[in-house]
Amino acid sequence: MTESAIGASSPGVAARLPRRPLVGVRDPEAAELWGPVFGDQDVGALDADLTQRYPGRPHGECIAVTGRITDRQGAPVRRQLVEIWQANASGRYAHQADRGPGPLDPHFTGVGRCLTDDQGQYRFITVKPGAYPWHTDFNAWRPAHIHFSLFGTAFTQRTVTQMYFPGDPLLAHDPFFQAVTDARARARLVATYDHELSVPGRALGYRWDIVLDGPAATPRETDA
Amino acid sequence: MTVPPPTLVPTPPQTIGPYFGHALPFAGGTDIAPDGHPDTVTVHGHLYDGEGDPVPDGLLEIWQPAPDGTRTGAPGSRRREPAAGHNGFTGFGRVATDARGRWTVRTLPPGGIGYLSLCLFVRGLPGHLRTRLYLPPAQEDSTTDPLLSALPPDRRRTLIAVPTGPHSCRFDIHLQGPEETVFLDFDHGFDHP
Image (cartoon, rainbow over all chains, first blue to last red; front, side, top):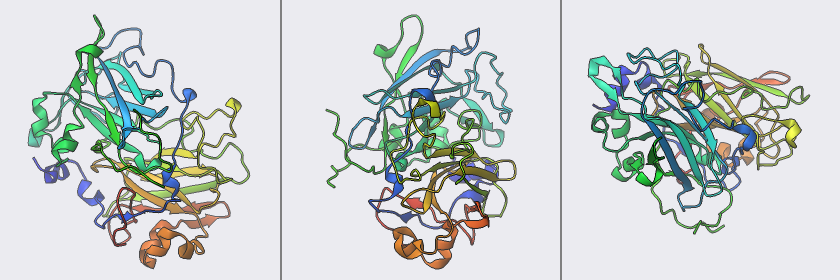
């Protein structure tokens, strides 16, 4: 499936794509070379564990997702906000616009957030999201994915992306994943199973490291 | 400023999708200005697609220096706590467009520059869009600001908010069409404006 298929099945997308080239900015005084700052008050104590919000446990396979956020030089993005949202184990979002066939889970909302630590590490406990159909005309299914909203040390690095799971056969059929044409960049979107990260008796461990693009105001020491 | 050459392949963006509404907007996200501040400016606008239709599923983020020109921001960007030791101004705001494509934020004019930095996320787009909102009056900036001065007048106009009152202005964003807003790239060199 192609990008035109995305347009044909996502109402109005063709009219949303800008047609003019982007205008480059290389101003060393640009305000975008700085960015918003977050602190402990911006996240709740349980915000990073999506399985502990309700009296009961959510359905599905419990997973621990962790990784390190750096810039392109490998310097850690310290004490920054990471926000995630995802479907439940049945592939259904707890969002009123999702009319998919999967059942809602009364014990799962699928929203989380945390701050990275001083090494740029983040960690979430959640359940593995289900795949779901997004347009029946095209036999189109989204592979299991978790949406990530990321802040860097500069507003130039602000981005939103999706994490996928290794070995998912739907990746070959997903126009959103395949829209990234560079194989090395596409590989960045797929987590790896890491047995060392699994929590015995509780959660399977996945590692997903993130590299943010974009210049920042001051060069920082590269983490050794 | 010596910057080491980039070495790592960056993680590419992916579409925000339709289901961010219960995850990203937060209470107070539209109130960048501390409550009751006398210098508060209301900035409002519409988000339109190339057909002129409102875009009801967009998310707009604002980043800016403080009124004194400070660019370092302050912790509490999504949960401001004046009692925690800062002046209640973090320079960050977030607003989702409503069913008619409208958005409104209240802020304080930034010190040292004439613009707010915007990052826009829209259902269906493969990645985010970056632009700037120049507060009126921006006429003097059009010769001294490196971005405005590099743009032809008809393109420059898309970045300048229009006054709607003594303390308010309107900034409509057009994703496409004859009035397409200028969108920015910070990762590479100057393109042809």
